[in-house]
Length: 206
Image (cartoon, rainbow, N blue to C red; front, side, top):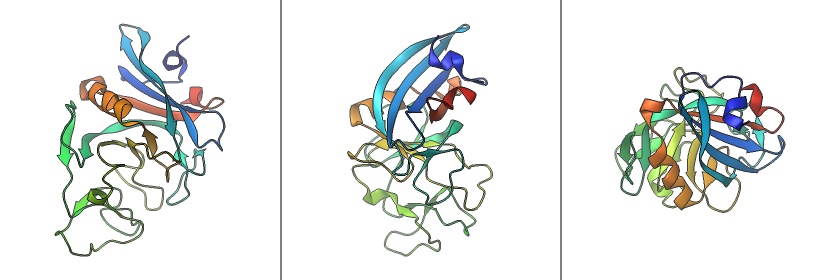
């Protein structure tokens, strides 16, 4: 049976992205895309090799631990990038100077995009990222809806699917540029897509 059909629940999703690691310590894994037609799932893309967090994957991810969180998560309503919109069906935000991702657990804007005047220091700290400066990794990226609405302080932030740089990430999922563009063009808000992340032994429980 297709992996998407073996998951514990796909909710209302008609699109599923599975990210499967061999073990909890794995820093790479396999991504596959699945499309539901009537009651059946069919492969829609992949398998593609991806990089994961430098500390592997975890069902107990927290801020700064270097793991990619396990579980089933939506895709944020807006995609982002330093480069022009490649034709996504979600909203698209072209990153500019002053666009930060707030990764400060003490901040009211924790785990959201925050814009400050270009050249000024943001009022939040932690490991917050100056997104517009990461010209390679953040050419395009999608937000994995981990720890959102509400964001629990310290549980983790900035879990993205972004362009691969050839090495493990700090918790994101990264893949080569051609595959990344194929993925974000394929994803449709009308299909309520899910990203399901886990190991060979755990992914079917999500």
